[in-house]
Every structure is written in C-alpha cells, then in structure tokens.
Image (tube, rainbow, N blue to C red):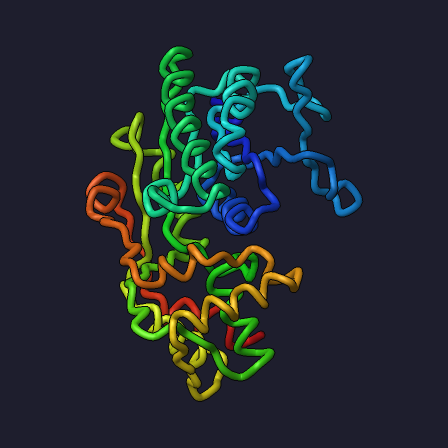
Length: 295
C-alpha cells in the first residue's frame, strides 16, 4: 500500500482500447493509476506516461513502487511486464491473452499457427515467472472485443456498412459469437484486483449475449440506424472476395481462415468468472446503442 492508503496500479498499454476505459474505472474505485507506455506522449496535456528501460530496470520518469500491474499489452511481451512488476515491488499482475489461443488451433495459416504457439508459450512463462517471484497472477482471455472503435471485428463490420450500405456473408455461416465490451473487461480488472479467488487463475471472458454471426451483423446495422442488408455469397465466391480485399490496406488483415471460423461457435463460459468475482457483462445490443447512437 502507498503512504496515502490508496493502492497504486501500474497500467501497461494505457492508451489501448481497454486502457482508455480502465484508467477512469480504477480512479473511480479509489486506486492511483499510473500509465506505462513506450513513450511519454501525453506530457503536453499533463498526463504522465512512464517508460520502462529494460536494461536498467528503471522507469523514466521515475515511478517508485506499485501494488499491482495490469498489462493490456500483447501477451508475448509478458516477460518484460514481469520485470516491470519486480522493479516496482508489485505482488499482483493481471494480464490479457485471447480465446484465439484455442479457436485458431489447427489453422492452416502460418501466421495463426505462430500466434497459438506464442500465446501458449507466454501463458506458461507468465504463471511460471510469477510463481517463482511470489507474484499473484490472473489471466483474462476475452472473446471478440468491441466498444472503442479500434477492433478488427465489430468496428470492421460497422465500417463496411457505413461505406457500402450492405454486408456480404458466406452461405451457411451461422457460427455463434459472444462479443465483449471494453468496459466489461475494464470492470473485470477492477473487480479481480480486490478478489483473492482470482489469484493464479485464468478466465475466458465473453459478453452477456450469444449471437449468430448473421444476427451480429444485423444488430450492427440496427445500431447504425440502417435497414439490415446482408447479402449471402457462395463460400467459393466469398473467398475470392477476400483475396481482392487483401489488396487494400484497411482489409489486409483479413484471411481465408477467418471465413472458416464464421462457421464455428466462438463463445466462452462466464460462470467461473461470475462465481469468483461477480462478472456480469451486459448484452451486446444495449452497449452498441449506448456507445454508437451519438456518433
């Protein structure tokens, strides 16, 4: 604990989509939130971001100590995060992985195969290093994240709808989705900080509603105030559209393996998180309307 009696929490990746919501959440809960990033971008606005020098094991500007670290950075960088926690004397780390660690198993994409290997290795190192140092760890693996207009799922669909007025889908692509809002993930962090039951555990976190992929698209149309226009394409033709889309920078991340997953159910069981720290995510449509109607 700090001298003021308030816990200091260092947030790695504070400028990320979750971080933008997490910092206010922490402060409202009485924590002192400290931002850690690659550079001090917000100095002109009076916002200090501490940069970690891995060689010296120190922060610039100096940070002193922290009770806990929340990492919103990609999980493969967890070894550096653990070093930060050690330098700060933190006894608690909450980090984020991805349910893609499971859904991309067996993928034919070399990129996705490497992703799975990196996630598995990072999870193992996270628990191992924390246990060696006596640091309590918690890992969150979210499903499809949305809510900050920075994701490659819901926001991508919304962008397509705004630009073209319709959305193409491969025939029969009825896989179930469970999108989770950034604010629910930020709330999970705050709840887990004060909950001993979450120490040394991993949780898959989904949103409060399960939707088929076509229904997800229709809900986004509705949130945009538009009549849903979902055009079904034969799978072969849809894969051809993907090849064409990859030539454009904004859609370069799209791969044929993503099309295959449209036929799969990608959901999470929230019950353990609900039992351990009261996790209660809100349904997809309510959050979409609350955050987008004014945009």
